[in-house]
Length: 272
Image 1: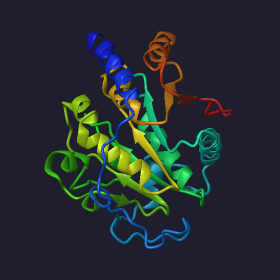
Image 2: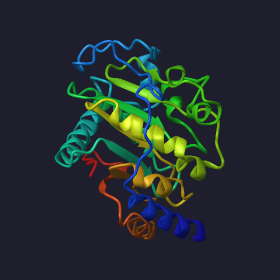
Image 3: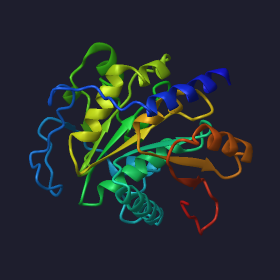
Image 4: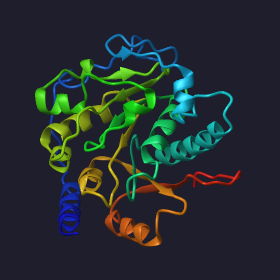
């Protein structure tokens, strides 16, 4: 709890800062669509495209890209609610987290990102910042040879890391190897500069950050000053009221956009 308290204070101090690092235009990100004036029919010229078997997505419960799965409509509803809230506040950076591990926050982040990419008015960048347990790439049955740790630790060019999973208007910045000093990396000047670049390079882009569970480490709290809003994922029958109270206290200075109740076993599931 002492680390959490220190992280809370650090997050509040960071939120009060008004300065941000300056960067050359192409110093970090080279994710450039061939057409920059429209988000329709984008062809990526510097981002690697991989093609995923739809059956793999179905097996891994990536359902929002399917035209046949009923649950797709659930994520479309969530997408609309998230978009309305973010657009009304002129936000474009959303973090997804949960209280503890195993509650489904990474899968929710993946499906929400795909649902957002289906909206032709913007592009989506999904960033795996669960640095101790990166998993976004696993849902696409893809093993990245480079990840965000390579950029942070070895100066690997971003164009060698970003991937398009064969879904129009969506790009992934994957993780690869675990980083165990993750809270320090998440608040490092290089990470702060990267996040600023990701958020501001394209005005039509929404950035989704998959963060670690809030009560497992101080990572999510350390990173919270750099996002506009936070989406919480709770698991029915597992996430306790005490956990939610702790989260509410930890994130009292953050914009919580809503809560997804995950793994509901009824036919009338509602994401909020």
